[in-house]
Amino acid sequence: MKICMVARTTLNHSSGGMQEDLHTLAEGAVKAGHRVIVITTRHPDGLSESETRGVEIHYLQDTIPESYKQGFYRKAYQRFTELDRQIGFDLILSQSFAALAFAGKVRQPIIARFHGVWFSESDYAPLVWRMLTFRERLETGLRLPAAYRTYRRLQGFATRVDRILVDSQFALQELLRTHWQLDPSKVRCIYPGIDVEIFRPLERETAKQQLGLSGGVLLYFSRLSIAKGARLALRAFEGLNRKDVTLLIGGEGPDRPFLEEYVRNRNISGVRFCTIFDDQRALYYNAADLFLYPELTQPAFGLVGAEALACGVPVIGARHGAIPEVLGETEIFFIPGDADDLKEKMATALDDLPRLQALASARRDRVLRLFSSERMLSSIFDEFQVILSGADRPGVRKESGL
Figure 1 (cartoon, helix red, strand yellow):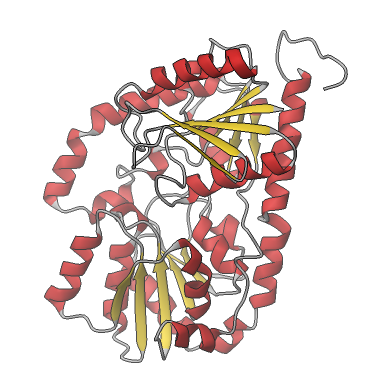
Figure 2 (cartoon, one colour):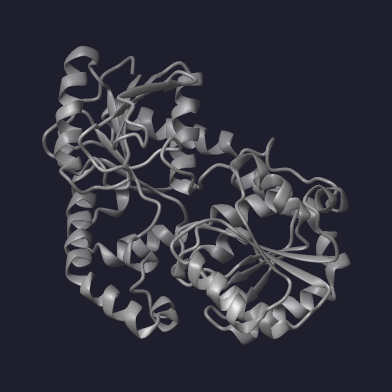
């Protein structure tokens, strides 16, 4: 197969769940013998092309890195048509709606990989809105008209592609609920994949020593935006008032200055901010006694939660979105957006660590069964073959040999 993948961002731009999903899928396709070309936004260092493990990446020079603005959709389609004349692609995979300008114009089937249902994972979600300051609410409100136009474009794109792959059963139901014109038969749930060789259990005390930690360790790790719930985790930890426990806040993002100022102004001890590089993630998970997943929106999956499970770490998560679907009922859940309930669940879990940590094997078994990279790739490649056979494309004659 010759596959064109279109994406707003890649791991060469920044780290994140969507970037890792694209990376895993592209490399997996190359290993399976397929040719993969990725079209994406401008490289941060100005490269026009790059190749990593056989994946060819074309960067659109006159676009904004990681942004759909400045004509990305049109320019991505133009680059695709140039490459298609040389290569003759068989299939197009769109990360989110990066291939929006392709719909209705190309002969190839389009498969869209949605990692959220947008409004359920935006700053307009009710629990996020409650966390905003007055100024933040004003700024967010001013962005609403443009956000709604984007949402409407997403709805239109969803109805015109050949297949939609979502990250969870929650996301599938939410997509159908909010896109009432969408044909349910073309939506599939395929869980994102975890590299279980990288994310695996290590000896906890050894991991703590390597990071200069001791005592109880709570880990929060995500992009530091209001929607991801770091403010909630910090407030819960402040109320916990345990001198023998450290809260690690890992990640970067626009909310980090607010969080650091909050810690300084309230003189909260035991909080440590850290930048966690990709090759350190498994070490940090394994150094944690508990992983906190307090997201305020309703996530479509929750990669960090699955990675923590793969390392055998107990997780305390908000009971909404796909979080319960990912974690399973052996983990601990709190009322979404409720700092007091999160604090109580943290206190109870810290007093019950031996029992919770004894479930490490069950956590990892769950990841191996549901969230391995091999399982994801096999499921997605099966969908590719079905689509290419023409069996699910109205008006397309099924041909033998595909």
